[in-house]
Length: 336
Image (tube, rainbow, N blue to C red; front, side, top):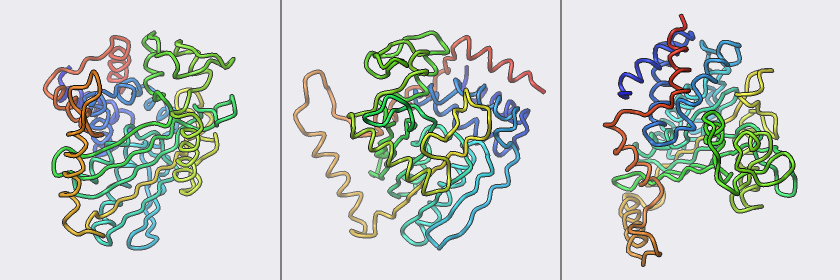
């Protein structure tokens, strides 16, 4: 399907589910971009879930989002249980605004929901020539090191910096595989890679359904577990959002809103070294790219390059939609 047609259809779906035209456009843009970036687990595979939660009044389609000014650099957003795309979009723009004024922006968000790819928000800041950190917690998926029960979410860590061309953006979950891809595999009846998840009995499984009932494995063992906990502290405890396993699974738990927390930190890179930052970034990239290549590698890429190439490659192509997901979308499109 052509991306512009898909955006129109998605916008209509969200409008039919009582979101404003502006908020519907924000949501449709983020979902289509996820598909173009090759991150389908954060794209159309989640559309029905968003709509189901809106219908069950667990996502507020008409939120009264409040931004509390703590200082010229710091703001706190009460998202009023809005869809995560909208609250995070507002928050990153406020963080950018604050950093442009004072050099640093710190914006926390509470009472929000799943906001898609962190790199979408990081890219906005980097395009304004800012360094950025994005954190969000998520529903239980990862067992703390030494436990066999899921408590922390996949809790991604995202960092971005300007380079003068393709943004440097590192965006990775603290689990080996993100949960969106496991859910997509389950929906489409696909297997997941060996070694990324355990079933409920603690054995490695390649069955996506068993993985969702079990627990995902962290990157780097205890290190990944510690990073997931760190993100839960920053985006959950610190912001006033849910934490420590209390974030509700948007697909399975309809007992109440998610109350997810997000944290955005933006920094003017000129603070310490003035206008030299971009020059030094380019130097760093050149040094890395000139290193001897490992066997099987034709090029050494920095974080953000691969996704940028994927986006450019897909941008002028039709977006492929799995038949099951297309059927769901058409059913939602028909809702009045």
